[in-house]
Length: 465
Ligand code: TYD
Ligand code: MG
Image (cartoon, rainbow, N blue to C red):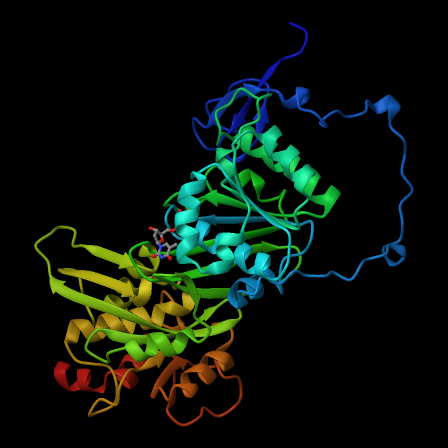
């Protein structure tokens, strides 16, 4: 056989091999290699042979002209902030999220706003019929109905349409539905998704069309298939939240034109997604101060955010007992419970423990440990956190170490300022968080988890005595 016409591509990492392997040499995942046609036939993929190549003259970076990046603001403040100030013309943005989280809603709203501002936009949908899209748009206000839409899954047709229409911003919903006739693989396979991205990148750069690629994400959080896109696109946005809950967060995992530390908060309402510019107010307002409730001064990107962490502890008949989490990492809970038992005298070996971050938010940072520990300890003792008499919710942040020590986490000043803004007292923080400055009133630095418990749960000492 002269040249292999097919190759084997890993569905997890996109690594390609001429022969089949049980284990992907790229990412070491098992059974992920699938055969697909080698992409040599794809138009535009032709490469010049080594003999025909022309050497290039390198240029000093200082001599390269960089055009001031103009941005197209979508008018949705939270979205624009995460993008770094708006959409950069000609950029490729991957918007990932679980099905039903609101990706189509967000993109339709953004296109509607852009159309209302006189921008040329286009919505390409392979997921829904035009009538279904219209029904959604009816809920999203007048401008959403101005968005031109094509329902198509054939990649050639989509590219031709883009070339003819030359919109400034185009949404492709979703990249997993696009199908290139030149390739055998089913729509959504790694080869197809990558082919779609390659073709769209080329046309996006050639005609300064910003393309928002919508991509589905599996429940474990990885972009199914589109993970191979992450290095092709300029920007990877992740839309998170629990489908049954109201709140959604939008984060940039990668951004060539801005920081990856910003996050936007939205609320799903009857008329689409509403921005939640002051999310702390919403979440602290709902904090109960009941036993098992602690307020975490979290960081959502570069923005401080107060969220309530709730815990429930109940005697268990199960072996091993249940550990149920919502919004935090299960392994972090296991660690916190182990340290509570070993170093703080709160043993929970015979109890079911449930921990929930209220509002469907995720608190995936080590700084959440202390809030989890305090909420669980408070639930286990059945007494609310706070000074004698209970003056409302206690705020905290800090990482719990394996030896029972508390470790400082980033942005202590901003977290403290946010807690102060809402008058939360006391705030329990790891020793050394605030630098050399003397702690402000109501701020309790603690070196260990035991000391933090003593500061936040004075009643417990009496209960335990
Ligand atoms: P959708 O944008 O279709 O999600 P995705 O494209 O990520 O799969 O919207 C998902 C859910 O949002 C849907 O179950 C209905 C709900 N929804 C609202 O609550 N209010 C609204 O105004 C809209 C348009 C949708
Ligand atoms: Mg959708």
